[in-house]
Image 1: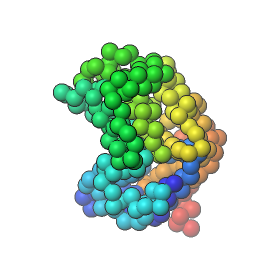
Image 2 (image 1 turned 90 degrees about the horizontal axis):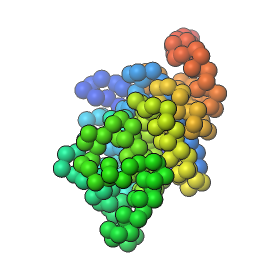
Image 3 (image 1 turned 45 degrees about the vertical axis):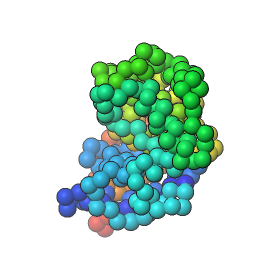
Image 4 (image 1 turned 180 degrees about the vertical axis):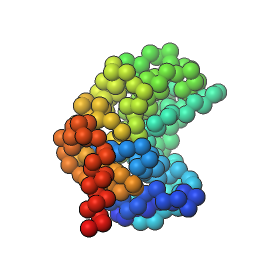
Length: 253
C-alpha cells in the first residue's frame, strides 16, 4: 500500500528527514515513536501534501507516485490525516463540511453522492459510536470545541470517509483517559484487511488501546529501530536517550 524509500526533506535548507524507509501493507497497524524534533510530524505533513518542503526519495501509494498528487487528490485516493492540532474554521458548519468531504471522495471514485437525509442518518450512527453530542455537528467546524471534541471529530471524519490509509498525528495529545479510549475504539472498530493505519505518537499511552503490528523509532529524521508493541513498553521504561545514543555510536563505528 505505502512504500517510502530513502525519503529526505528540507525546509528552508534545514534537513528534517534523513533517509526514511518504511513499508505499510493492507491490514497492518504501524506506530512511529520518537522524541520531540525527530521528524514525526514532518513525515505526516509530507504524506498529506503540505507545501514548503523540498523532497527527495520515493513515496508510492498503491503503486502511484504520491508526491505528484495534490492534497485533495491524495484524500480522494484514500489517504487520510488526523491533525495534531485540528484547525478551527469559522463560518463553516461541521455537518456541511463532513458531507462535502464525503461526497467529494465518493464522486472521485465513481460513487453516487449521498443526499442530505441519507448523510444525516449515516453521521448520526457514526457520531453515536464515538459518543459525540449531535449538537456539535451543527456548530462551526472545531470553533469552541474542547481538545477531546476536536480529536473525536477527526475520527468521525475518518470513519465516514473510510480511507485506505489513516495517518494519526499525535491524536492522543491533550486527551483525558475517557476520550482516549473512545478515540482508540473508533480506530479499532475501523480496522480491516483492506485498510491500514500509521499512528504517530510521542508517548506509548495510546498503544495500550490500539495494538500496532510494528513500532518504529524515529530519531534525527531516520528510523533507527523497529520492533513489535513490546518496543513501546521498553521505551516507556528507558526513554529515548539511551537508544538514540547507542545508534549514534553504532553509526560512527
